[in-house]
Length: 452
Ligand code: NAP
Image (tube, rainbow, N blue to C red; front, side, top):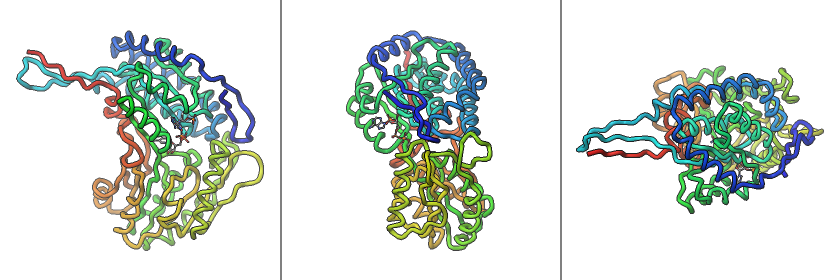
């Protein structure tokens, strides 16, 4: 049984029974693929556009469900549904072009590359963006002619079921998208099934290692979108107002539970004091409370155990010499709340630097120079996103392109995902890419055809 618990007050929203016929679902998905893979792009496009329409039409209800199951603020939940509609229309409009045959001159009378769907793809997804994570995988995967199985995080079963319903209501063949309510311990069996051709996981490093090992055992393709500890570098000539505004926004979006949130603030000596003052002032203004209220800055975290893990990271860092400038305490009362927290005197040995902080905790790190700031930024096992703030756009661009070790590097802006740009990490943040033309080519057979 899966329990959906409202993180606002710990009340049970609903219990969901486990899927009992997993093998049958896999068979159905495969059978569906046998015919769906032959459907025309124009047919898939109409379905995807219908899906986008349904998302827009039901945005209030879907947002409400997300907020109830994982505590996301209503405004953020509505924006998430809208972004899902965007990725559906984006791939509806562009998939055919991204996957059209590529002619290549050789000794053949005709030779070309074709992109053929692989088959049944398993997606293991996290709770933090319970709709977006699924749609950014599913829209390209289904436009490419694959079918999908979803194993969603155990605390968002309501969202998982709603997503399956949306695909069905949009008119996709009944088994083109199937939600499996299974515990993570059963993911191995699904990967092992001969009719499952590939797997994608968005989640923690530990889950990534487990899924990659299983995919490796059966020699199946996998894409991993894992955690991050994105550095935000503030250089001496940065526009501090812009930097502070962006850093606060990036740290607190989704109550800090985003893979590409700003997680380490690396400051050169020239800006350390001024940035700290301004940053603290902005963080102090943030109100914590009911995620359905428009005035709320951050709602609860998704689960009490995750909140307690975050607090433990703060305490372990403090024990090693970090100082709390703001927050750092678990509020009294019910709910998985944690206040905006600012730590200073953070050094590379501390959990606040080394580990991913999945919540509203901001470690401020003093660099001795710009070169040291860069070394600190790259001194991480993660490599998802990074941002650099500087008045010299050209220099910052060179740093972003040549020096920062991450999948996405932004200059004077917030690291964000966008259907038009590839998204993914290096190092322990994973491999493979989602979104853009790169994303849709992950789950296809890049097939060479040679004709005499
Ligand atoms: P998680 O605990 O790893 O869970 C993610 C998914 O993996 C859930 O469906 C979970 O199922 C499943 N899972 C957990 N352990 C597994 C295992 N050993 N084998 C197979 N499946 C397993 O992560 P989370 O706490 O939900 O999400 C937060 C993490 O996701 C953070 O590290 C965040 O940075 C990362 N994330 C990355 C991206 C990206 O694009 N790079 C985007 C969003 C989030 P259960 O719920 O049943 O355990």
